[in-house]
Image (cartoon, one colour):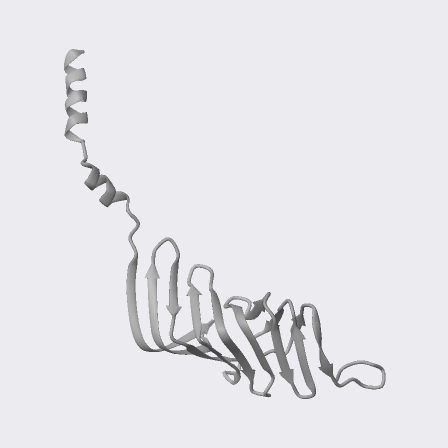
Length: 180
C-alpha cells in the first residue's frame, strides 16, 4: 500500500508545470494574415454571386475568424444568370466567416443597374439570404422617388424589394394614391 502512495506522490511531482508553461498553454493566440490588392469571388451552387475588390485585407483567426477591409472595398453582385445587378462601395468592411455576414460602415453606397441608390453609414449583408439590413438612417433614391428611413431598412441586394422603417420622403403616385 505504501508503495502505491509513493508512486502517486512521485507522479504528481513529475507533472509539475511552471507558471510560464501554464500561461503559454492557455493564452489566446491570434493568427494574422495580410493581403494587398485583393480580388475575390464568391460563388454559391456553382454560380458566381459576387466579386470583391479591396486594396488591403487583414484576416484574423481567433475566437471568431474574420477578414477586415480597412481601406475601402468595392463589391459587384450578380444574379442567377451571371448578370450584374448591383454595386456596393464602402470605406470599411468586416466579413465574419462563421456567420456568413458582412458589416459595412462609413459612406456605404449601393447602386443597382437601374440606377436605384441606397446611401447609409452602416449596413449588414447576409451572404445566405442575400439581404441588406440596417437600423441606422438611410436615403434611397430612384426614378421619381427619394425616401429617407430614420430607422433603417431591409432590402434584397438588387434593391427590388425594400422595407423601410419610419420613412419620410417624396414619390409619385397614381390617381388612386398608389406609388408607381
